Structure formats: C-alpha cells, structure tokens
Image 1: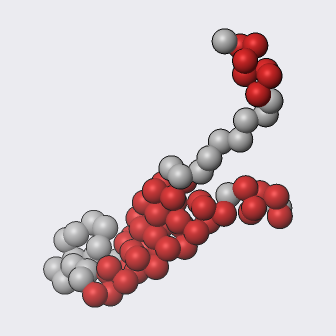
Image 2: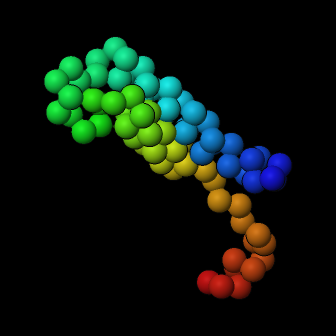
Length: 75
C-alpha cells in the first residue's frame, strides 16, 4: 500500500486539489436554477473536479526506464 501511494502521489494530489476546487466552485458560483448537471449539486461538482484534477496531474508522471541496455537492443 505504501509503495502504491508513493508511486501515485501526483494522482492523489490531483484528486484532492481537484475535489477542493470543484467544491469551492459549487459553493461560490454553482447553479441556482438546478438545471446544470455538474454544478447544481455539491457531490457532482466535487466528483467532476476530482476526476479532472486526477487526469491533469497524472499527465506529469514520469515513466521509469528499466534498463538502458535493453532499450538500445530494441532499436
């Protein structure tokens, strides 16, 4: 479990920051009429923010190379 958390710390940070951003967006701006699918309820806005934050932050994860010699042999 600890290794998974260390390997995915950017994803976890993105989900947390996105959740907070989605909740704050709902609280400050939101949708008064209730017809907006994402921003009319706090849990929709928070979930959407978590998804977008996780996707955004996971783009910056660097892939580790196993062996440079093996990569040279593949070429």
